[in-house]
Length: 588
Image (cartoon, rainbow, N blue to C red; front, side, top):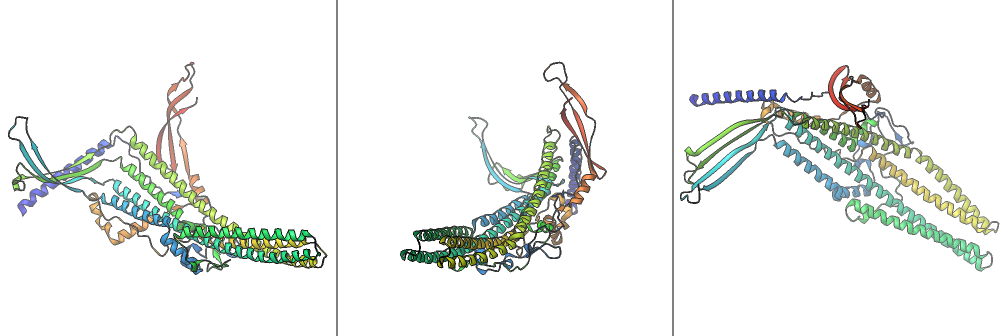
C-alpha cells in the first residue's frame, strides 16, 4: 500500500502546484483588466414617506398606533366573519385560474433554482462509438475501432463566487415569485369579497325598487279612481303613471346589476355559485372587527407582497452585479475522461486498452473591447432602477392605504346625514300626501316627496356598500390576505462547489437555516432624516476637464467643441469609493 500511495500523493502535489502556478499566471494576465472594487455599502431605500409616523385621516372606527398591530396580521379566515363569503373565498382559492397560474409559477421558479444549484455538481457523460476507415478506395484492409468513454465535462471551479451569485439571484427570483403569488391571492380574496358585497346590495336595491313599485301602483290606483270620480283632473293620474314607470326602470337596473355581480363572482370563484352561498340583501357586517387598526406605515414592508416582491428583485439585481464582477476573473475548469478503445470488439475491455486523461483549463479575459466594463455598468444601473422601483412600491402602498383612510374618514358622517335626510323626506311625504287628500295642495308635491325619499334610500344603500367595501379595501391595502399560516418553503443550496470544500460545515442544518433567513430578510429603509444625512455626507467632486482634441465641426476655422476626459471622484462618508474616467464632448 505504501508503494502505491506515495507516488499518487506526489503526483497530486505536483499537479496541485501546477494548478496554483497556472492560477497565479492567469491572475497576473487578468490584471490587464481593471477589476472593479467590491462595493460593500448597504443599499438604502429612500421612499421619503413618514415610515414610523401614524397615518393622517381616520374615522371613528379606525386607529393607527404603534401599540395596536395592523389588521393585515390576521388570517383572512379570522378577519371575515360571514360564513357564506368565507365559503366563496375557499372555492376561489381552489378553482381560480389566475391563482392556479401563480402557484405553478412558484414551482417553475423552484425548478429553475434547482437547475442553478446543480451547476455545482460535476457532469459525467458516457459515450461509445465504432469507426471503420480505409486509406483509399483500393485499400482492402480497412481498420475498425471501438471505444467506450466515461468523461467529466468542463467543471467550473467557483473561486470567485460567480456560481454562488447566480444561485443567490435564482433564489431571490423564487422569493419574488412567491410574493407575486401572495399578491394574486390578496387581490382574489378582495375581489371576491367586493363582488359578494356588490351582489348583496344589488339584491337590496332590487328589494327597495320592488317595494317602491308596489307603493306607486297603489298611488296610481288612487289617482285613477279620483280622476274617474271627477275629484281630480287627469294630470295627477299621468304623474303617478310616470312615477311608476321610473320605479319599474329601477327594478330592471337592479336586476341587470344582480346578473353582472353574479357573473363577476362566478368568474372569480371559478365555477357555479352554490345557492346556499348567495348573500342576503344588504349585509350589514362581514368582518369580526369593531375597530380597524392600520398600524404604522413601516408594517407595509412586512405585509405588502408587492413591496416584498420589489425587495427581492432588488436583491436579485445586487447578485447580478456580483456575477458581472466575477466575470473579470479567470474561469478555471476541470475536464477528465477514462475509457477503453480497441480495434476488436472482443479485446475492448482488456486491461491493456484502458486510457485516461485529466487536466485543468483556464480562460483569462485579457482584451474584450470594454464588454466586461459595459456589462458591469449595466448591472449597476439595473440595480439603481430596481431600487427606484422598490422605493416607488413603498410610496404606492402608502398612498393606497391613505386613500382608503381618506374615503373612510367621512363615510360615517355621510351616512348619518343621509339617514337624517330619509327621516325628513318620510315626514315630507306623509304631510304632502295628507294635504293632497285634503285638497289643499296638488299631487306634484307628493311626487317630489316620493322621488326624494326613494333617491335618499338608494343613497343610503350605496353608502352602506361603500362602508363594507372600504373595510375590504383597507384590509387589502395593508397587505392582509396572504397565507400567513402556510410558511414559504425556501430552497437552500444542496450542493457545494469543489472550490469550496473547505466550507463543508456551511451545509449544516443551522447554516441552512441562517441562509434561508438571510435570503428572506428585509432591506433597510432609510427615514427621511437618515436619507437627508446620507445625501449631506455624500458629495461628488469633478476634476478639471482635460481636453485631448478640439473639433471644428463646420470647417470655418473656429473651435466648436472639445473632446477630453473628465474624472469624477465620488466620496461617501469622507472615504473615496471610485474614480470613473468619462469621455465627454463639452461646448467651448
